Amino acid sequence: MRERRIKLALSRFWKERDPSVDILAVEEINIGQGRTRADLVVVGDGFYGFEIKGPRDSLSRLSRQLEDYRSVFDEIHVVIGLKHLDGVLQEIPSWCGVLLLSEIGGLIEIDVFRASRKNYDQNRLALAQLLWRDEALSVLKKKGHSRGVLSKPRAVIWERLAERLSAPEISSEVQAAFRKRGKKWRDAL
Image (cartoon, rainbow, N blue to C red; front, side, top):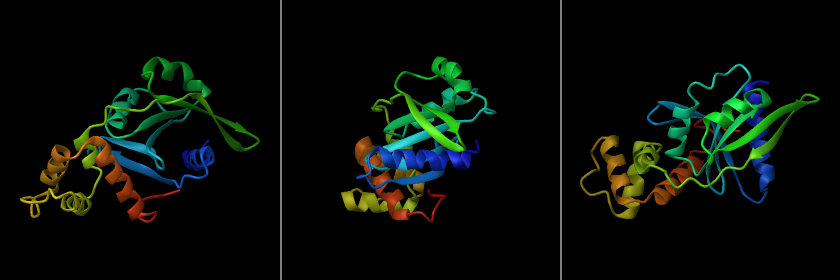
């Protein structure tokens, strides 16, 4: 199974989960200032991260990747084939969802092996760092917190956001920014 086909199948799977929710699925988003790259991010009725581990992938980095995922996403899912199931279940925390992949007649099937749980440990600074400088500054202006940072570098602007807004507020602003960027800024499915 090629990763691109898996991502397309995941996007369809998520859309079918609740057809009334308009979703944006975007590939390869840097989190943790580029330390980790989320394979697929879905913006819908929340902010969801998907880490895909194909049959040839190693699980050696998975714990660190999931910690970075945990800093920003509402829910996290590890997407695997049966080969990795035992290793993943030993490696990942109980709050992380597991989606099982199989290929039947050339079509990729996705089954929920374990549902994810809501993540309440999002990091405000890590969330703020998902915004481009002008987006972060726009949020600060809208919320009345931009005084003294208009000409500052983005790191200062992110810090101000993290100081003044809650994680759910920043997450909502990130999701809105991703939607506004649309499908052109990254590979969107």
